[in-house]
Length: 247
Ligand SMILES: [Zn+2]
Image (tube, rainbow, N blue to C red; front, side, top):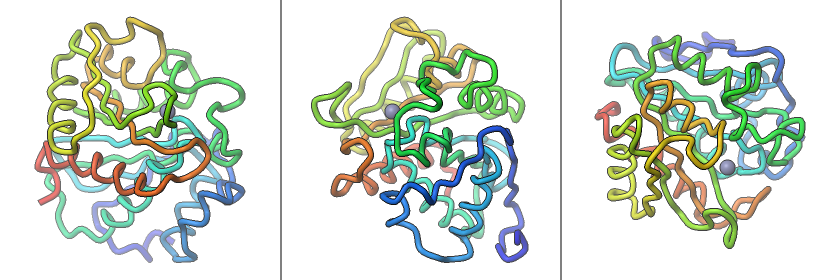
């Protein structure tokens, strides 16, 4: 199967075989995917495991995550489209890792939580999907991470934004500044990572020494509001542009 995909630097890493799920059961999500070899390959992989897609080589090493909340669909769709584009890229100036479905079972069920646990409050709990992701990113020596979400109007935060913190990793705020300035998203900056609650993927990464931000676009939960996939992709592209990783 892999040799049908013509990209020398592509590598597939299976982070955990405990968390695979049949995301084709999410009918809203599936309306955005076609029957191509590429999409079928991704779907089959996610059925078996929690996968990490790697493109390019060398530094900087950056990572994009989506689907920590299963019913926040625009970033997960945007990440799939990004992966499709990365397969076709002749040259990447560094390494890009993508986890498009961080909680496959929650995506399958189109719900926020995985087995009734919020994965963005569980990154410090051994064996949770977000904890597995944090550990993998530390192992692979990843330099910078952006975690992509969507937020319903009148919820928290309820508007397009980028979360960051100042301590212990000022670089988190620098990344957020760049993304907000180039996309028009609003900046939400905390003094200390993990100060208001524990277990957010972004906070755990910042605490572990990997600068990270959380990006939010506006969309109804379990659905795709107009323009939201594109807004999420614009945030992803801004993150990659900051590191000149795509020439
Ligand atoms: Zn979320």
